Amino acid sequence: MSQASSPPRGRSSFAVVALFSLLLLAVTGGAATAPRPGQDLAVIVAPWSERPDALIAISHAGGRMTGAGRWSFIAFAAYDDAQLVSQLYASGAWLVIDAGGLAACQSPSSSSYSGV
Image: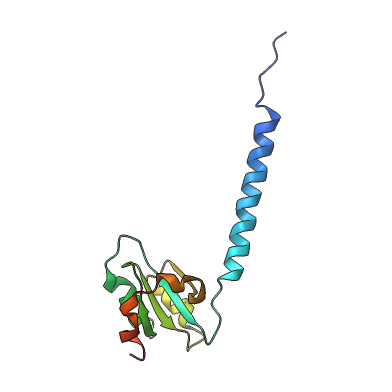
């Protein structure tokens, strides 16, 4: 009689633990970076986008830009309106998070954008 070979138990257990860990990390990270009213938002568009794409998303959503990012696909906006986050997603943003964790990603010259 021949027995069908089955995958080693160690590999499948490792895969389940790895997937669970990634899911837990994503949920924890998402909760820590959730936008809070009154705080600035980091608006992230497709990484291959030009600088105007992040700024255009903020403009189309009716937001107020507070700074530019070091990279062309990040811009910062004030969280003045409860509907702004959903409007940013509708305007092409890939990710909208609390800007506090991305302070190092803000362009040194972005202070010139403050109050625009």
